[in-house]
Every structure is written in C-alpha cells, then in structure tokens.
Image (cartoon, rainbow, N blue to C red; front, side):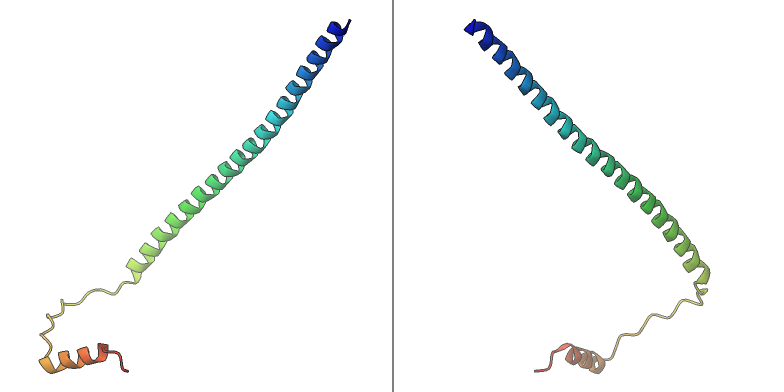
Length: 97
C-alpha cells in the first residue's frame, strides 16, 4: 500500500512540475511576443519617418534649386595676397596672452 501512495505522489509531483513549466513557458512566450510586436511597430514608424524625411529632402532640394540665383561670369582667380596681408593674417591667429 505504501508503494501505491508513493507512486501516486510521484505522479502528482510530476504533474505539478509540468504545470509549472507550462505556466512559466506561457509567461516567457507572452513577453517575447509582446516585445516582438512593439519592435515591429517601432520599425514601421521608423520606416514612415524615413520616407517623410526623404520627401522633405527632395522638396528642400527643389526649393533650393528654384531659389538659386543664376551664375554670372566666372569670377577671375584671386591674385595672390601681398606678403604684408599674409603676415597680418598670421598675427590674427595667434592667441593674445
């Protein structure tokens, strides 16, 4: 009779462990599934934001090109600065103490 009770308790303990593993597994699945769906939503929002930024950049380029003044004759190359002007430029770069 003791053997029957021990085997019954063993079956009950096995059933309890199985149920505990099932509950923990469902909990882990819930949180992983929730994180995955949030990640998918964030990815969709980022893709929509990227598309909007691309459209804004294209519009900005068109506006800049439309407002860009027409170029006149190419400017003559700047002649080399005189040595005195170069010295003054160097002096401006030196920090005062």
